[in-house]
Length: 286
Image 1 (tube, rainbow, N blue to C red):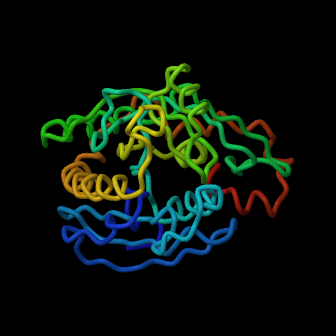
Image 2 (tube, rainbow, N blue to C red):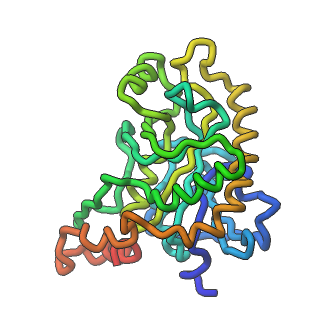
């Protein structure tokens, strides 16, 4: 199998997902990118006969802060190995009473409150603007949501993920403000990933695993021991879901035309591309 067609589906997530007993024929793939090193080596295996790549977002030692993640390298590496679909798994805090710890949320929007992160492949001589009105591939999200419900996992379809800078958790003022704005969940990673995934043409959908009520709910403030216990249950459930969802992901279809949007998003004429930059971006923009 050529390097370009290693796997069409990838999962970005944390500890436990790349050590699933259902993942067969596991091997590591190291990728060099024009944007530096990805978060870690990529883990390749098969689930129900379907090749899938796993990328630990914070590294296998969980040594990379949300603000330190080299998202450009991560996305370029996945693209170079033939990936078309990306399932993004992350822990979040809930901003609504009905979105309780251990529940799964499949958001359809995000609000980016990060500061200074690199969230585009463009710049330095090539200008591009991708549409983000509908930032996630909701056809993929719906497939996963339906499977989660069938499995008895308390799940919610839709809602807004507010992406904060971190690494500290919210103040009470921030938490109440986010609730007042009508946001559903709060995390530290999805917005940056989603912007680059859209430029890379991926069918990208997040699965948000609720671990706590942020700090707005009296008596339910973020507690590390509670979060750890909840996270363990969430990991068990997301592993179960991935076993079912990965074989179905390729058949999910797409309502947004995710893979085609980049074709009309580059504003700089090709004859004006800086040669070295175009070499780095050719994989992304064609």
